[in-house]
Image (cartoon, rainbow, N blue to C red; front, side):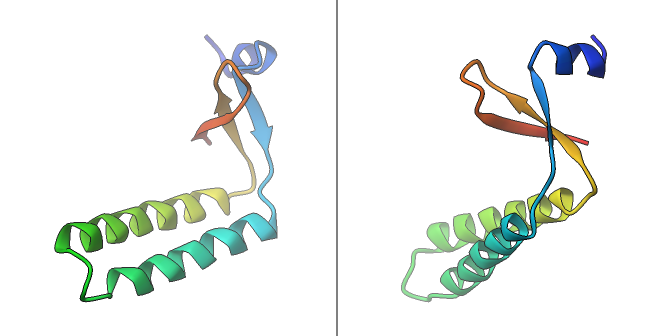
Amino acid sequence: MTLNQLLADGKLVKHKTSQQEIASLLEVIERDIADASINTLSSDRRFATSYYCSLLQGLQSYRTRASFYCTTNSQGNDGAGIS
């Protein structure tokens, strides 16, 4: 199946990232870095928070690209991204 077929079938949609979207991701990243340093949290929770933060950093980096495509599920919600 080609990219054009996926677009025509509605399984992919073009997505243009906004500055607000990137700013929101950066806010969550900063919050998670701060949360992961709270010593009273369990080591598992601190690790999970740090791990999620690293995923968000990758997403932020990915979404700063000029354009990409998002997959949709049957309800049309955003799913995985494809550049």
